[in-house]
Image (cartoon, rainbow, N blue to C red; front, side, top):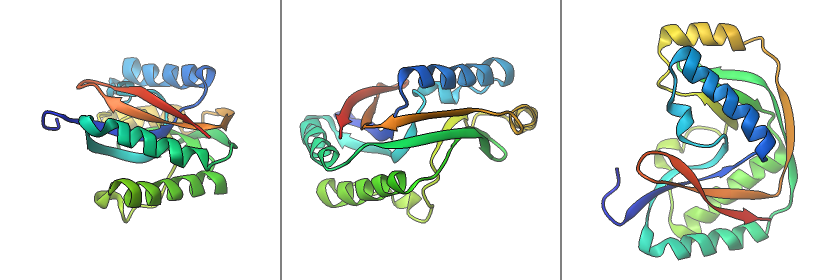
Length: 183
């Protein structure tokens, strides 16, 4: 946990409620069938910027800066198709990569680095791999094999229009949507 006066945040795309409900039901299935509950700690989302610490006293600066960034963006479509994994622990809904999504993520990283001095040094060498986590790293290896056997061939498709992104804030136990930023 961060020190007093510091909170944890991250920036993500949240699907509309009807798709969130579908994805949440997958998360709950992984919990009941395979005892993976870690993904239940946040709403279904596509991470744009990994968790970072920020002084709560300066939260207004963070929000105002992200509002400015959001205004320079335009809507685009996101397609979810089937499932993927980061073996041997994580199972996710695959996001079809698109140029607008990649550009948004890159521009956001550049913006927060310059404007807010936010860095994700530990993720610097990893390329952006958009996905929506359904079973988290708490999925045991033997249960992963069973869960992946169930989901590897399973079909799922959904698409939605992205016209905003969300700042999420950790309350000490789970991640909650804190502020939405419309394009």
